[in-house]
Amino acid sequence: MIVSAAPTVSLREDARTIALVGLAHGTSHFFHLLLPPLFPLFIRDFGFSYAELGLLVTTFFVISGIGQALAGFVVDRIGARPVLFTALACFALSGVVVSLSTGYGGLMLAAALAGLGNCPFHPADFTILNRRISAPRLGHAFSVHGLTGNLGWAAAPLFLTGLSALFGSWRPAAACASLWAVAVLAILWWHRDAIDDRPGRGASAVATGGVGPVVAAEHPLAFLRLPSVWLCFSFFFWSTCALSAIQSFASPALQQMVGLPLSVTSLVVTGYMLFGAVGIVIGGFFAAQSERLEKIIGTCLLASAAMLALVGTGVVPGVMAAVLTAVAGFGTGLAGPSRDMLIKRAAPPGATGRVYGTVYSGLDLGFALAAPVFGSLLDHGMASGVFYGSALTLVFGVVSAAAVGLGIHRQRVAPSAPAVTRVA
Image (cartoon, rainbow, N blue to C red; front, side, top):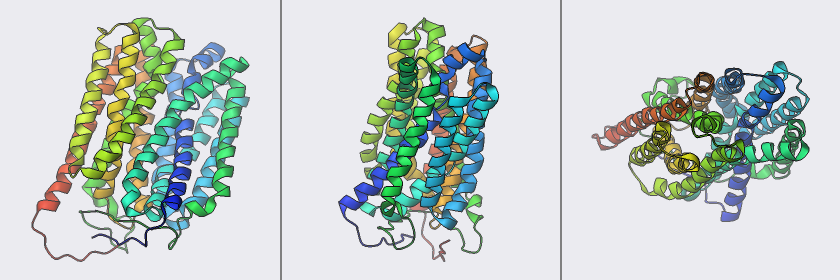
C-alpha cells in the first residue's frame, strides 16, 4: 500500500528541513565520539586501561540502545521536535560533566548523559523527514542525513584533539563541545517551524513502499512480529561492530602494528568518515535507482571488509595501512543510503518512530558490545584482531541485508492476493 503524500512543498522548504535535521544528526554523531578521541589523554592522566575505556563506550550505547527503542514510542506519541530539543540539552550537559570530571565516575556519568541524549535521534529524524519531505526528494534527504552523521564523526576527533592541544588540556575542549550543542539547540529552536512533524505540516511524504504485513491499529507492538524488522536490527548490529572497532581502536591498533605516531593515526578515523561521506553522496543516487538494494550493500561492504582484512595481515606498510583503513570508509558510505531505503521498504506504514527506533537500537547494541571486546584485544597485544574482527562483522552484516532484500523481492514477485491493509 502506498500512502499518498500531501501536496509537494517547495524545494526551499524541503532543503531547510533537511539541513536542520542533518545538523542535529551530525551533532548526535559528534557526541558519539565525545570520549574516544580523548582516550590517550585519559590514560595519561588517570591510568585507565583500554578495557575500562571501552566500558565507557558500552555505557553510552547501552543507554542509547534501550532508550532508542523506547524513544520511538515517545516520538510517535508526542512528536519528534520536543524530543530533539531535550536530547540536545542532554548533550550540552554531558560536555560540562566531562570538563569537570576528576575520575572514572565523572566520565561514566558523562557517557550516560550523552547516551540519553543520543537515543531519540534516529526515530525523531526519520519521522520528521518522512512526514515533511516531498516524496521525490526523500532519497536525497536520507543521503544528506547519513552524510552529516559521517561529518559529525569526522569532526569530533579533530575538534577535541585540536582544542586539547591548543589549550594544553582536554577539559576546555569538552566545554567547547557543550557550547556547540547549545548553539545547535538555539538554531533548531529559531527554525522550529521547519521541523514541526505534527499531522498536516510539510509534505507528509510517507510513500511506504512496504511489502510485508502491516501493523494493525489496535496493536502498537505488532510490528515486532515481522522478521524483516529483526533482520534489519541484526544488520545494524553487525555493521556497527565494525564501525566501533575503527572509531575507537584503529588509531592505537595502527600504533602497535606499524609504529605510526598518534599525530598520524589520529587522522585515520577522520579519513574513514570523510571517505564515507563521499560514498554517501554517491550512494544516494544508487539507492534512488536500484530495485535490489541488498546487492549494492553487499558489494560495497565486502570491498571494505577486504581492505580491513588486508590491513590486519600486517603486510601493508606504515602510512599505507592508515590510508587503506581510511579508504575502507568509502564502501560503507556507499552502502548507507541503500541501507536506509531498504529499511523503509521493509517496514510497515504508520509506525515510523517505533520501527526506526527498534531497528537502529541494533546500532547501539553493536557499539556497546564491540567496544570492550576490541579494547580487550588491544590490551592483550592483538592489534590485528581489530581489523580482522571488523572485516568479519561486515560480512555478517551483508548476510543480514541479503536476507532482508530477498524477503522483499519474493513478496514483490509472488502472485498478489486480495488483502485488508490497516495503518497504525
